[in-house]
Image 1 (cartoon, rainbow, N blue to C red):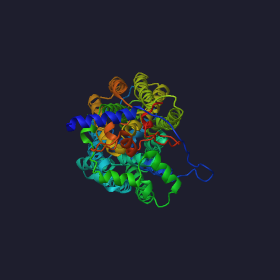
Image 2: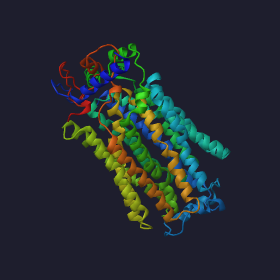
Image 3: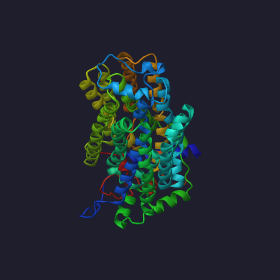
Image 4: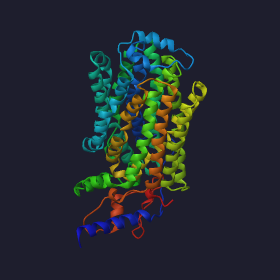
Length: 536
């Protein structure tokens, strides 16, 4: 029998096992009084803190740049519009007269986007680094060095524009491994039906980091100067990096204080135990790179994240500029108004994560259905409201409302595409997250730079409408692709395989893919179970 034929038969058996699920004996974890705070909850909290600080150091420039640029210089005179009534933008002009830098909109767009040059590159290797050197070390060092670069940003910016671009690129490179490391931690620590909630809580660090940074940075820049924005955000991240090193552990078996009950529960439901990992290493199981890059469902997830990121980075990088240049708010007010949508996004994210897991636990819908419905909510609905915001003109209440609704619905990206990364390959979630994030974060520099080209000849309401339409089209195309090709099943290449003639029940048992639930099913040799793949 040829090797290719044998491989096809093994993959066929795996897929058959994936598609035949059953529940048997159930046991539950003890949740008596005093047992609610678990070691895995600390991991989720630390993941939240890592993402909070990452986004705080990422978005601080979006507000600080308004105070850094001399708005009255002839090179930057096209950065504002006088169509809408003044809501305090004259205060920005006063700040602008003392601004240190004569950057035009193209240079601003480059600064806001160059972070992602480094971020994309390091995302590719982030999952590998977490696997090779451990989640604790990668998270801690990434956060520590990022804080140092942020603190040094003011003198670097004053030295030269080129050096500041290089520093922001380096910051992106240092923070690239954070998201893959968080996904790797969740894949190892979180029982499957707690997955969506855990991802939602960890990822809420993104919107909370933005929610806090935008208004606070505006006030700091207004009252203390733009330099303090970098000193304070970097200064907060520095001790947090030490906290990550102290409290994060690579797996339940490495945790010195975890209870045996919780450790056993996590290992049974995730299938990742010390013995399992040793067996995996002894079998010298290589990373299935070819399968990863040729997996259609994984590409569908990548396209979905890409589309959502285009909208996200349009807001993240450009919303404070829109508030100050078109709606003409002062620096503090533009930061505060830009942050309001992220408060709504945070609340939406928590509710979405909770109810999505409830739907899956009660078997109301399949995982793939949950993911695709959430994809629609995260891509199509925001597209509608971002276009409406562009046509709201100088109506501040309508513009802020439409922006808020649009940003809020972007939260469903976490419960659709981001959670789907772990659905498809929990064993390789750190690596696949790194690959997907690397590709899907091209909008980090493409979106602001494309917007910069559109706005280069002057910021008018009509030009901004083109920017918003571009975001809406990208998001809609992304949803269509994910709706057609997306999946909620663990992919066959993500299961532990063996070249010997091993029965499929042994293969599935060794990979131990369980229903992500508080209930722990046991395997029946005659009917192998892979409930992650949802015969719900």
